[in-house]
Image (tube, rainbow, N blue to C red; front, side):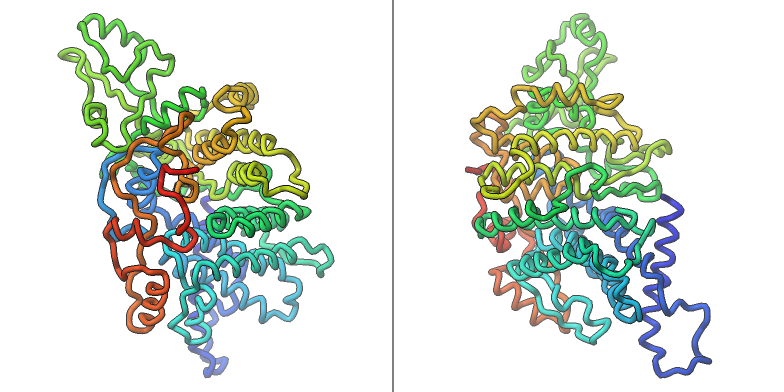
Length: 565
């Protein structure tokens, strides 16, 4: 993977350079053409670059946005409550600078080919890919340039309009439908393929159809609080499609590379602070006997003969720890430190047992699971699964449970899809841990472990709170994709404060429900201001109170965090 990705990036950069230079040489004769400059790039490598950048731009996002902000708000973890800085929202600038340009150029190059009919499916792929990240961009920004994006390069339009969120979703649904129709069409002339230059799917167009359908499910979930009828219609369209959404692990969008080190060459995942498990997630994982607990979190120091050591020094563990707990090595800290300062004190301080013995009690996140090169290690490889089979299956389960599948073949019950989603989540997280050379959930095929988990009283359907159980499994699966975890908590209000199943912890901190975009400058300030005014946004506001109350369109009718129905 290292050699191929590096090669793709080099060739893609040459191609971008070629595209820039080509517009400057149209009045020159052939004698002025530099034979060393690529003027007709290989579009295969242009795709490779955009796919690579869709993942690797997130180097700073992991720390500044995910771990310091969104991950705390969802209460998957607890950590130092840093203020939001300008380091967040790199998703926005990278969309226009790193991801979209090559996708537009691919389509331009295809349009210039004499046999462009043979490249229709390659062109359709580019739309699916740009929508994949476009959804993430609008999630925290609302209106964004799209219909006129990238026109500065080709049409000298440097002041694109900002499409509102409703327009974006309608546009994306239309483009996804068009792409699905092309990618599924077996009557087209023999189609060219990206082959191995397609980092995600190796040119398998059927898998691109599955991804497109799963993206429709993502959009449907986001639309629900504004238009549940449309959510139902989209879901039924997906289930009626012959190919359907992602429903197998080999159709996940996965990226693995020894070159990508999101926490630097030293793997410094502790940058600025250490991140710990929250009390709520550890308590649930333990109660459900969830095998992912040792994948997600590191055990504390209470191992071996710790009870004998405590007795020898006549020491007693803090009241929140049961020394006879079989999973005593996993303990969480309060999501909001102000709610339980005594317990929070153990996040950064060890419990003193004797003059030469002390125990750290709160479990850290499994740092090697995220940073295989931690402390300079060379035996692990970073893997990211951008769109999981589990997410797709659990969304299907959610929509069936809500009654949206009435009248169509949903290819199984809500419980069937729920079990498929959980099974895939455990397997996928385990595989990520294997490639990282980290602690795994199981050895072997894991079938017995997974079957035991599915049969746990806290997991299996009980006919009472089945929808909540689906939500919580979506939540647990989103541990590695915190944008989707944040969107889930924001759109549903789960985990909810009043729950007896999985209660959200009291959180006194104000939570921002969007980010902000910077002033684009005089050339497009008018459109930027118009978009902000239409959404009711205060320009350049970065205070959390404003970011909490001024919501994006699809979030306007959503419950507050922790106040799901």
